[in-house]
Amino acid sequence: MMSSFKISAAKLIAKVGGPFSKLGSGSGKSFAGIIFTRIAGVDAVSELSKDMGIGSIILTGTNGKTTTTTLLIKLLSSDTQIRSSFESNTINAIASAFIQQKGDLGVFEYGIRNIKYGIPDTVQRVVDPIGVVYTTISPEHAQVAGVKNPFEDYYKAKRLLSQGMKRGVIVTNADDPRTALLGLDKEKDVTVNYYGIETDDIEDINGNAVECPRCGETLNYSKYILNHRGVYTCSCGFKRPELNVKVTDVEFNPDSWKLTIDGDLFNYTVSKNVKFNFDITVPAFGFHNIYNTLASITTYATFTPKVENIESTSKSVFNNLDMSFIPPGRFEVVDIGGKFVGLGQGDNGDAAKINAMFMNQYVDGPLEFIYTTPDVDEEEIFDDHFEVIKSMNPAHVIVVPGRESIDKAHEYYELIKEEYPDAEFYPLSYSEMDVRIKKLVELARNSDYDYVIMTGCGEEQAMWERIKRNLIDN
Image 1 (tube, one colour):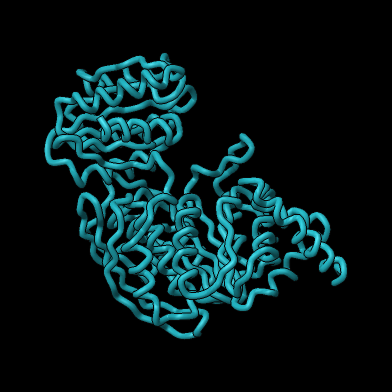
Image 2 (cartoon, one colour; image 1 turned 90 degrees about the vertical axis):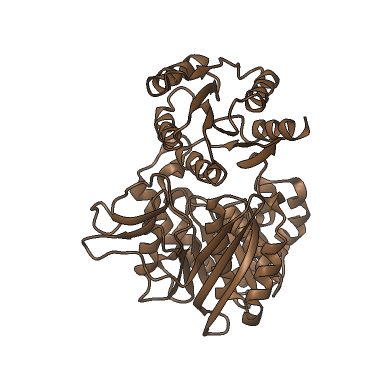
């Protein structure tokens, strides 16, 4: 057993080394934790966690972790002092927050791609969280160090983060059958608060059928909401759980959306059930962010020590939401002289579909689809993209290389041309980014159509942001 002297010494040395955490992102943010665990060992983090007056919340999932964590930090910080870490998914980042920050409640993002590197069972044991939050689980992040791991192993790694919990609350997405099962399987040990969407105003353009995570049979969906998320049942008896927090109504406007949030859940800090119903106004920020909003509000309402503030704080944060924490290059629709142009990164099938669903709110006539292609050995991405293109029923398609290979882009174009004979191809070079951006702006601005969507692969955010700025400024 680690001596208290060695743990105290490790903590002191880590605090002294703390100023070096200002070196930057990545390991710089975790410098104090790195020092501590190297001296005292990972198991000694359990001694640090005992300093939390209320406890720690860990957030994980395939998508939405950073956004949800950021929103939750904004919400909880209004009611109590917290320790937090995000965008640095290691036990060292959590240890650094324990050492360098003050507060009785911890909020920690934790990305897990496999058991070996993610050590989820170890993290659960040494941090001993009072809350584990699941956003959504899907296969696209199952690759580690260039090796694609079996999805079953990836899913197991996520499960291990909460499997050992004997106290606290799991907050999980009921619309995702994979995260729902993680909650259902722990109901005998802890409270589970489920969140989801309960309105006919949001429906997927073509949902993805998935296997039942319990028995392996194909799930029956009565409604798809976003990809594999929706309302589902299985012959084995597995089905979407009842929702504790839900969006019951949505009002879409070009610049903002009004969401009605209805809740009835257990609050861990005051040990009682609380109910709420209120409207919030958020930026028109994409359907996936509705789930991030739900996850953050559900978690906030589950752990805030000031339950009387749930409505007022939620309204204050979301009605005045600063979108700077969402990366540039996100999908947006801009109005240029009465022409609606939707543009942004869509480098996998899920992202492109979300962009298409967003664009569909504005389309009231023939649409042109300007598609930026994936590269060599990315045929699966193209297949998903092509399904999204067809779901939009475009009147015209333009194809442009989104990555380096012009030859591969032309192959994708030939496949698209079989479906859309009048499709056009522009062999723009990836190395001449200024020329590419200028041409894409020109194609959108001079389009014969009042509705244009431009999405697919590209130069990670920067390209899309420059196109948007040029469209708006010129």
